[in-house]
Image (cartoon, rainbow, N blue to C red; front, side, top):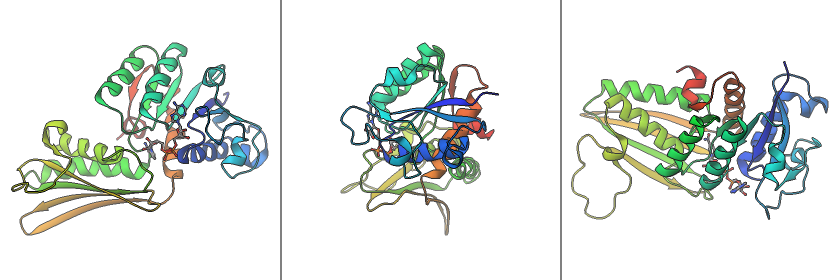
Length: 279
Ligand code: NAD
């Protein structure tokens, strides 16, 4: 079977570099200098005009040796002949890309976080219009298993207060993290409540006592932390904490590559990493 031809969007970013390394590793490009036929191949790498990475060889940019694919700012040209896009960019870019993926019938793996409700509606529409989309606030296996444990614990520990704590590197631009929200949704699902109407995203000043049944979020930023998440179930005289620590962005990139391979055998629509992993 032919390799899935993948375009990396946001190639000049932190996740872009990790995605280039993951696709190269899975296609054997980095090792052999040629496509080995194991499922994925790097078709193109793109970023927005003005990004310093434009014009560089994708492999050299990602620190793995030349791949013969130059990072470009011409998205439309990059999509010609492609099968899939792995996109860790920014909300407006991901919405626009989903619409292009719908027109071209592409697989679109979206790791971008910070999407508004309106962005999510537009992305779901693109799934109905012909794109095969896998969107997740976290593509690591560990976090998706954690979410399933959180859902279970939230259902059983029905009276316990739930607090979600996250820490990320100083350059992260959205809060709470996509992963914190993913874990919040899992907890809300376990409780059979709506997250939006039960979440407390900020506390400041004289807040009064904690409102029962809410799900609280706390955000820390600093240094180079790849992503730490804790879900705390606080009950009478005991506390359960479920933690995940990301040590390398490779866990997200390998999950995204796996999602692209899975999606090529699905029909158009909007899927999650839980669908990919069968959770
Ligand atoms: P980054 O700032 O290092 O990289 C983002 C890249 O996207 C930049 O190179 C930027 O130029 C590019 N970009 C922005 N707008 C663009 C556009 N219109 N067209 C093309 N490229 C564009 O950020 P990062 O740390 O790599 O994270 C990127 C996104 O992925 C963030 O939303 C982050 O929260 C998310 N993320 C998700 C996961 C996950 O598993 N879902 C994991 C890590 C990060």
